[in-house]
Length: 539
Image 1 (tube, rainbow, N blue to C red):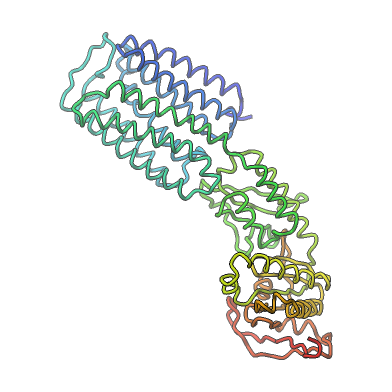
Image 2 (cartoon, one colour; image 1 turned 90 degrees about the vertical axis):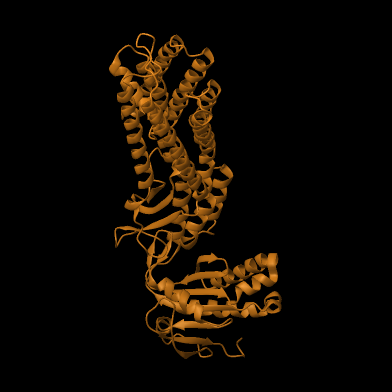
């Protein structure tokens, strides 16, 4: 077990931090600090220590809890060092004076993952740390000692050099605050819904703390004061305490509602989300529009998306993470999602169980080898939607049910149905032809279809696509869709491969006539297509 996963380690660190706080309080009071200021300062340190301890215990693998506790130490250790009687400890205390702010900036930019997600933030925090160390070092060297030392060390007179460095430090605070505000607001507005739920409390606390800290650091020079007022100091310290409280709220709020998990299960298990739709349904239910789903490709020994493109899982940014699901002991599905969701340990255990069941049902029910696809969509569907408005939904549902029945009567399998598009597969090419004729006949007979002028175009293609977990992948899938896209409403077109697969199996009253070479979107060369013609007597 790693040391950070041991609950006793977290408790030991908290006890050590609380002890330093108890030592720092009396030292501040003896040095002339007011009792309210001492209390506020030490309570703030204890808040950081305690909230960090709770976060550490709840998420041992996330470094955020340990980082929060570090701020509690950095609020008290410099105080103890500065008020000691050892000159080199006094110097170290001054150099460490801005370290708490550096760690605080790191937490704000790295939350909730505990690590910075891009190089700009990494450089910003590094430069900030170096600047604070340089300013503290030069300040100590320039005045020889500190202006707030205990009586035993005396007080150095304030020189022009001291004022210059105080001005530099003030500017440093102002620039840092501005950069952090811009970055955290940008992160919030580009984050997914679950990430926003987690980020909201800490960003609120961070904004308040930065604004009040700016008031503490910037207002005294503007007002001609040499040191911040007790009110400004106390307000700033109290505001900073909002941050660890906000962090804890974020950890506690990171839970997906059971209703969402239930809705996800219904979508997937009932078959509404097959390979083509799995990514969209997961993205919707988990509130992450950037979510990606990859399926294991045995040939390439990698995960590919629904278009057959390789997922580059080794190049994910820090704000994205991946959950890999296996089935029967072999790789199956990879889900790339917002890393904020990973902070809920049980979330993807539930999601993964639902996805495994759905993918297994989909894959086991679909035929493999040489198959024939039927692809359909509604002609001028956008125009129809504009005319019908809210009535379009029921019409679309009835259209899908009609197609499902036609496919079922020919022992076909529904692979996908999204928006006005419909995709089915058959083990026999003639079954696909009969299903297309059956569907067109019933669409023509339906009163609502005739009244609305609803016309469905269809394409048939035969091939040997790869069958991965969750559905088919490969050029044959796209081929069938592109053949259907060339058709007119009410027309059924066949690819050359589908015509060849039919052979002599076509019935005497059905005619397949060539319509010439057609250019299919995404394919380099035009290719011959054929129209399925049904005699009037049969139609």
